Image (cartoon, rainbow, N blue to C red; front, side, top):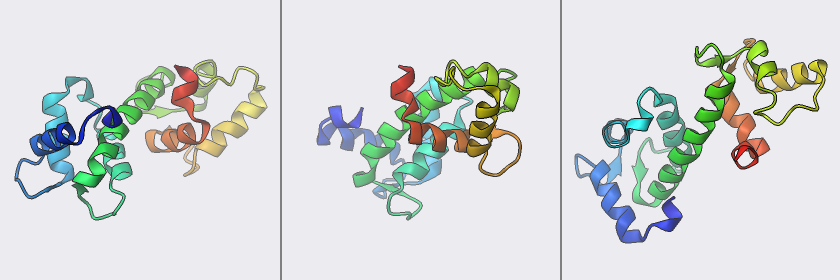
Length: 152
């Protein structure tokens, strides 16, 4: 997405996010602008937060112009991952339990896994050992497997 935009276009979009004009974007500015401008992100604040954390390479708590292209790309990438996550989260509670995971094995391209292998894979993804896969855990897994490109 961002790699297809010129520097001038990126700066113009950045300025539309920078509501206080200080040359850096807070999470609040990003969230407000994304939700106002892109209605498909409603009810997907997890996506916005994940993209914000990914793009904050300096760990300053702000997105600066040099990080903004990564923010735009990350919003797109994590939106796609969230769409996959929702296909697997059958009861739509924002978490994937093992039954959801088994039913979603086709979406994840894990059809060759036995139930025992699938359980091991589930446990590898469940980083906090809570018995459920949260969106952040799913993202870690999906990035390692390059899942977006496999599914599309």
